[in-house]
Amino acid sequence: MVLTLVCMAYPALLIYAALHDVATMTIPNWVSVSLGAAFIPAAVAMGLSPSDVGAHIAIAAIALLICVGLFSFNIIGGGDAKVIAATVLWVGASGLEDFLLITAVAGGALALILVFLRRSGLKSSRLWARRLLSPNEGAPYAVAIAIGALFAVPASPLLAEGLTRF
View 1 (cartoon, rainbow, N blue to C red):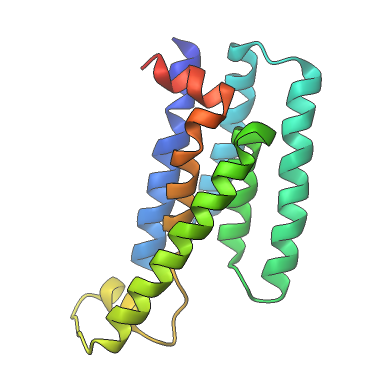
View 2: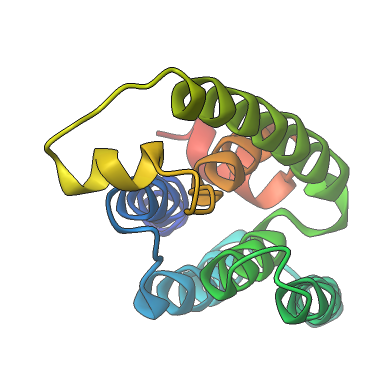
């Protein structure tokens, strides 16, 4: 029961991050912090060994370092970097490949959709829609991250166990 409740934070926070990114082109820091912090009680409830928890933390730290490098070259946003690292903390080595592959595919699809929409000449009076339609704006990549993260659930024993009990 506890594992399921804590694991529900994973999809809820990722979906919130995606929606907030679409609306504002930002991801609040509290989302990444909450996602990372929720991992600890989930790992304890699942009965992960200290070495398994350490492995999850090590993989997330490597992901964060890589993402900080991508951020420094203005390839991804800072919020995206933090959400990716927090997600990798949850999916671990077993879900990493699925997460990265689906995130990349979803990101490519998102980019194609935005290119099409931005070239279509659509206009909107809503600020969030104007941002999405502006060729001077980036992409709300948290959408792709959330899709990849949700598709990685079956490959992560922690998430698969916690969320299938629901």
